[in-house]
Image (cartoon, rainbow, N blue to C red; front, side, top):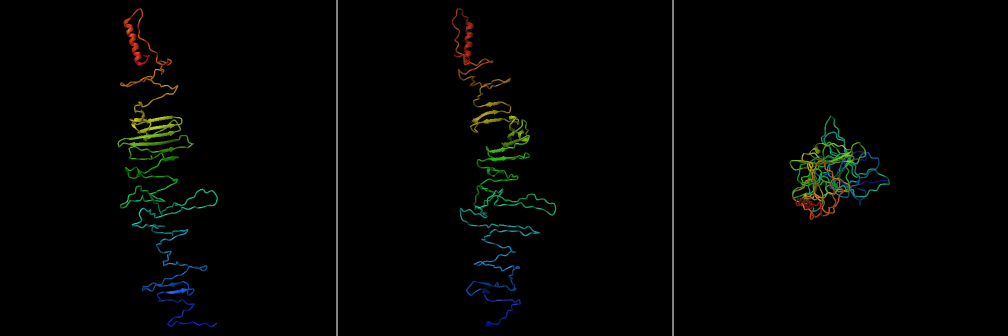
Length: 430
């Protein structure tokens, strides 16, 4: 079938199908290709300006089949693989980022740089990075030992020759948020776990910061009524300190040693108070045996030893150490018993001995005051006995000596005086 080729009314070069030739267009719309006159087209347009006559080449890798590149229906620039470029408002579905191997420099896999925003909306939280995992993930039926939503796996660092890294961390936070101009942060937190139980399976090391009058800025701060529970073995080689600058500190702290093996099991707690000159320490030691040892901490304070076979031992080993027992609050008027460093016991309250109990005194005396005095028995019906005699109530009254055939005035006066003194101390009724 015969074909007709129409030529433009201009000077042109005929393009062959088997030779490589340049197709140039000086049209403002560039070289336009379309499948049909009424369909959208693709225009290849050279950059306006420039004097080097450089050419950008679009090519493909070796294809195993036809490939299609779909351009967005918007004015935009295409991102490349080899250049450092900025992506804005992009959604990545199941991205896999693999870092290229570097043999020099200090490469970073991912760097997120926040912008210094200004005049943002008032009273609205600004979240820089949000890992929104709040959805339901359904698994097939079957037990699962461990499920972790976000994992950070530890790297291995090596050197060509012997070298030391002083501090290495898999995850590091430089600090808590800093209050800038006109800002006040009531509780600056470097890490905030807002709910649930946190598990630290490895050792935990806390470095003390600068001492502060604010008890909320210590190395370890516990708020709420839960207290601190420590279960398992503790390092006895170094003391763990909870410090407060408050005059009175209440620390709900539990040391639990629930092991069922071993010849000698113990749990020890040291509490120290410092008044600017003297450190006072009280310790609580619970052991399974009747013998126990104590070190430098006990030597300057007091210890309570709760032993299964050794009973209860109170040790105030400081030269001026003493024990005080209070009930009904921490007021001075609520002190019920004090044991001084010399061993004197002061009681402030009633003492009741159950039936059959004895009070044994050896080479000791009853010492009373010189103002009010002390009663043995507070009612005439209460029974007393001396020198193993059967206790009886107060004997009935004995009248003064009168009458009789023979009157010994002196003897009668002495008998009546003796009766009067016996009535005075309550040995006989009046």
